Length: 246
Image (tube, rainbow, N blue to C red; front, top):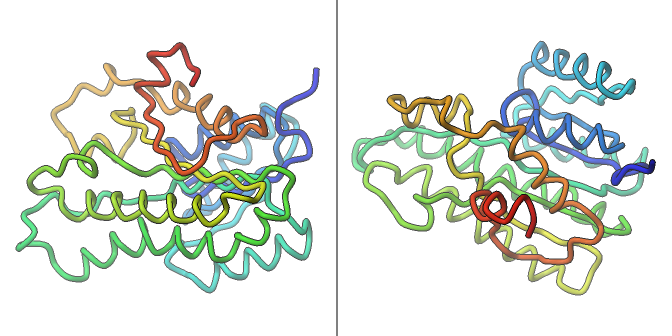
């Protein structure tokens, strides 16, 4: 039986744990050659072991802090030289930052949230734009948006602002690629059982939340060649309510 992403190349950021790890494993199971980007070598190696066990194939591991913007450019150059295209980009890496009144946030903490959640994703698009356009069906999915980005809430200013900016960034890119084979969309996961969620809402019972693996099929559907929507925000809760379909 053929797999959806056979002979497809996918880059997944924040791929060593949580949502990124689940997306990477599920895409590899669907036949994709996956390039895993994360900061921690040991966690990436553990992911490689899981993918080998499940698929019999190796992942390509890129230990990279996404604020190393020159490193993103180098990765783009390597992909261009070796493959000449990129079929799938999953921009998942992100940080929570301080949950604090705006007036109490240190400038360096604010900047770090913007660097990781916004600027790094701009640099990914800048470096991979031509590669996505060279694919038969380039697909870019960014884990963005948020309830707090759409309806601002006290103390969430840094995170909410960064996610609102990411939404705008991706929608702009989608408008610029409207007449190309590239689709770019935003996936809003909502409350999912991740380490970031536990830091954000420490009193919540994580066992009442869906796991990243419950969410993973949404990435598969949004990156499928037959998925032709672009420049939109898709919410996991709506996808789940519709029996894992759009």
